[in-house]
Image 1 (cartoon, one colour):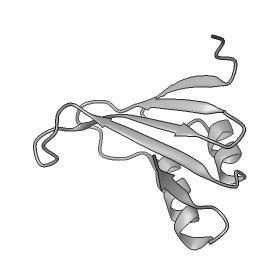
Image 2 (cartoon, rainbow, N blue to C red; image 1 turned 90 degrees about the vertical axis):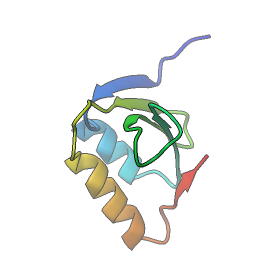
Image 3 (spheres, one colour; image 1 turned 90 degrees about the horizontal axis):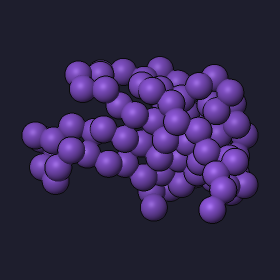
Image 4 (spheres, rainbow, N blue to C red; image 1 turned 60 degrees about the horizontal axis):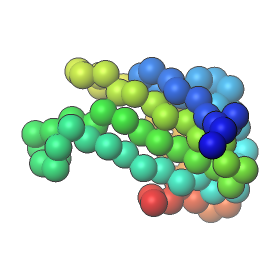
Amino acid sequence: MEFEDFEICDRDLSDQMLTQYLSAAAIAVDTETMGLLMHRDRLCLVQLCDPQGKVTVVRIQQGQTSAPRFKSLDDRTHSRQSLPLCSV
């Protein structure tokens, strides 16, 4: 299995990936936490995929409280009907 369209980012999306996901018709999102209790266990990984199969994995550091490019992607998806952000 080849992963030509796979990228790993630390703490936030790259500018290039943000641009690509903003132009996508849809985005699949999956998250991983360190456990099952949301009030105790932190977010550690976010996975995104667009309809063309471009996959990005973003590692979230312990204590991290912001990710500006993720936030701009989230803000944009809530303001446009044509770009659904769907959980898989």
